[in-house]
Image 1: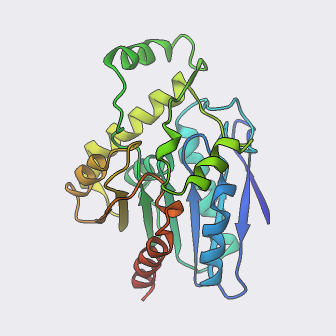
Image 2 (image 1 turned 30 degrees about the vertical axis):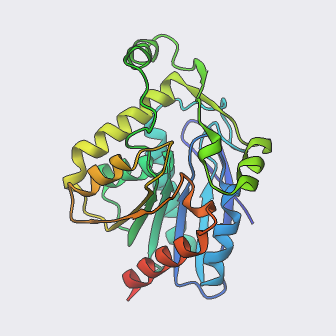
Image 3 (image 1 turned 30 degrees about the horizontal axis):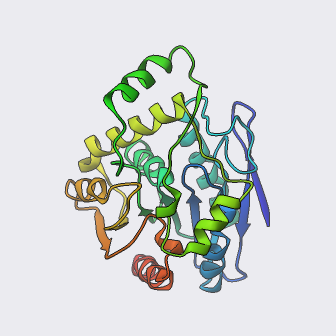
Length: 272
């Protein structure tokens, strides 16, 4: 079922919601850069079958949501988006535990949010977060971004995402390449915001108060597992699982059912 929220700047964010008849908990999903929430329909269905609700919206400038492709006006909109989603979930799923789940860019967004806001939720699942890139941007690109964010924050560049390393499942990669709602664009402001999110999370990891399940593939060539290892090493609130042989999208790997069972088991332990 379609589900929409509106931000304070007037942007409409379009997404989905799945509500089982007898829900035990609800998951708020935040997707990665360049993609959209409908790429998680299969994941939503699996949680639905286990009586866990699932919702999420396309990020600003992504999928069916409003905004210039690959651009965010200001980073605080991510926090506002999560505030709204959590509050709305507590109305739609009253008295049920709320979990947030972020992948890639979504993982970086959620980790920084947890550290800044310390929301009253049951826990967070973070997969392949953008804390350290596997392909580090050059110092010149970082310097240019720092300068241009004040001059042309909406300047769009190609993200350069090596899509062949999303998953070992070639069909998934082909679907991604041919998906009309997927884009490979990133603005100067979004790039700078992403770098700030990563640096903030790694610098403040010891302040984490929310239980986190942190999963990363050891063969991720997009977001380096070193970032997840570094983050987990600074806090006792994060349980780290490094998946052998895993590329970036563990939920789309040939062994995705094992990944799902691992996540479900962690959630069920938090519900007992």
